[in-house]
Image (cartoon, rainbow over all chains, first blue to last red; front, side, top):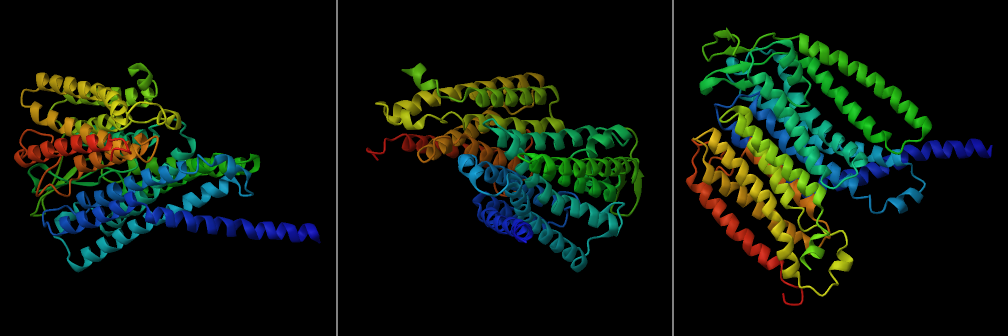
Length: 305
Length: 197
């Protein structure tokens, strides 16, 4: 009787502890000055660019939540995770597992994701309320548009801080936040730099879509046309979901006990398999060549650049 | 004395970031005026500015702060380390100028110096409250530089990080000159001993 009662108390208290810790971490996240500055900049940049009729709706605009909320949140998450390092000895003595504390930090990453969702809702509303000319969506249909915008906003705002938590748990050297930030920016830049000098092909598309953020629509040469990029936006979205899952699992693996570690590794393997499948389909699906769309609706397929 | 004061400098992150920034600027020099080259200059500047933020890190602050050296002397000695990122940025930009004559060498140097001075001034200010300001200031500065180099929301009024020769540079150069002067003043103020303040 006693053991049954104890087991049920433990089972009840675990999610409750996680919930309480997650609320505390979410509040810390939402009040962090860097995060607030990022959200303000994102709002300012979005409204400022929304007034600019020349902007490409799915390209340049999507950069703001990814950069000002996503990348900033990555640094915030890293710093919040590292902030408990000094009191690690005291924390290790409390009856809360390390994975629960990490789980709470991962749940707090829903705060920037919620900002990304708000941004996505605003963009979808703006597109419906003030519809841009059809050529401004390039070759992409309604489903593609939502996938592109969701990947640029919600998943970038969720995945980047999850990566920040994972790095905060595993990195052991000073300057880790800078390395993480510039590493991710460098990865995205390098992926796009390879693609920008080609007109398509599996390898450049594969390199571009391996990154956690990419453009599917960019302003063409002379800024009076738009380039629709290769790959499938829907499958790329699933690849991003898998990357988010892998980042969370990498964070949770730090300090996990044997049973939890085995379970996490299994979920991680499944996540990786789904991710790789989605990645392969993203690279092989969609456009195989860059297509330039002009204001009069004419389309030209790029020859080798 | 100087050697003793420099012993606490976190050399690994400082030198690694300086080397990383220099390498990126070197690669940018190899692909001048290209999409990648322009982006690499931004990331390279971010790394050099972040490296400069680590010069005031002092893990043994409890002991060092009690030592009979004025804060001004300590900061002056520590600030001399900034010569490393400054020299690397000047060298890389000179290389860039050699490979592409249209590179605005003087203006890019002004930007690099401005970023490094602002970074050092911020680190010196935060050092008054925290023993190791490098991580906080470095990541914040890197965030700001990367953000400005890829999507500057103030570009309509003052483009803070124009990286190519055909941008409007007048206001930008004036802004960075003011930033350098303000940074030096902040650095001097942050180096005053608490009892003198």
